[in-house]
Length: 418
Ligand code: HAM
Image (tube, rainbow, N blue to C red; front, side, top):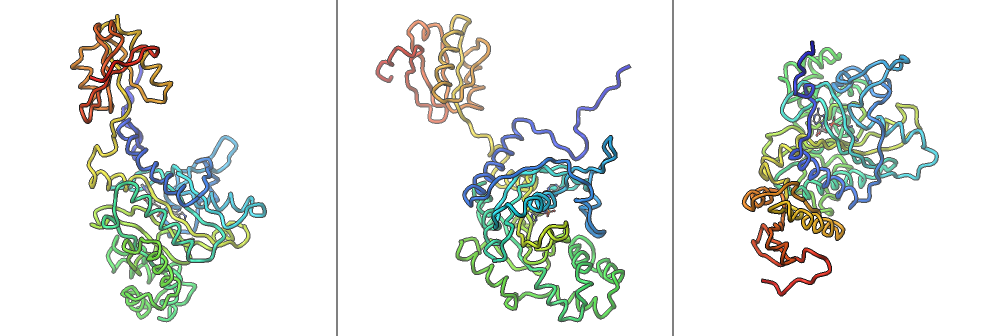
């Protein structure tokens, strides 16, 4: 007996129906256009990666969220939860041949076994922008500026989102000044990253477990009240250059931005919608040690990941659910079987001329044809027996309602417009 299989995709995975693809294409189109405008080169890799490359120390959520499996030859493999380790591996493999600094981009499908909440799926597409081999803070400005450019291309303005910026290096210096030993900092970062997601008492307990005394815990919370970044030359320069590049109005300093991944070493940033309704739109920072960690030569790096899920939710809320479906192309329909050849001939000619043509596959009443065409197409031609006999039909602009004659046979020239 055959068992009935549900129609739902596995939990957390997404199907993309044509209306979903319209949104995905709008978002991906902005990603690609912004990356091109800033001259990032494209790269790609397989979604299946070696487990050992992806798993890291305890305390990092993403390490615990990896989908992994043994293949038939007992290789421990995984679906990547992010692209950065793969990028580091690819760069390390060709470190001698590549001309640094690299500016690389990709749209990578990533998998994380996450607790499902708004904006978090178990699979998402993540646009990555990375600059490898550059110490200057202009690298941070370039990646953040390119992400801001993409948001603008999607139809948002700097009033719609905020990029919260901090620096792990600066936070480390502040902690060190408060008497917290540098070897404790990575643990402190991981605990502080949970701020806002769990009560401060639980964070204090995590710090206590990490070996901090009560005075050190109090000092840590005091550091988190820092509002002034003028003691950090790199942050000062970052904000100044963002002003020059025209996106400083989207930035705010926030010492509380830590980032959940352990490899960041310098400036870190995270973008949210201005009303604070959604999860992070994108996040990233400087990670100067990752190449060394995986066995490569020391190389500085800056980058970000920008998921498709949250920004699509935000765009739907701000621009409307159907803002992605633009009517385009020409619909061609016919009344009876007698006009079918003429319709196919016209469609073929228009397609050869570069138009996108939706040819009706069966005879239709004009009302039905135009109501369907009006939903998807910008223009429409309907061929009835009289049109076929005359050798002309009317090409209607469905937006402006304007009409012009169109010859059904290429050899004929249209009579003066009606
Ligand atoms: P991340 O903050 O873990 O960073 O992810 C970056 C972005 O990916 C998030 O801001 C969010 O838009 C999206 N994202 C992450 N997880 C999910 C999920 N489960 N569902 C939907 N969207 C999600 C990284 O992954 C770093 N590797 C980014 C980076 C690149 N750093 C340097 N280069």
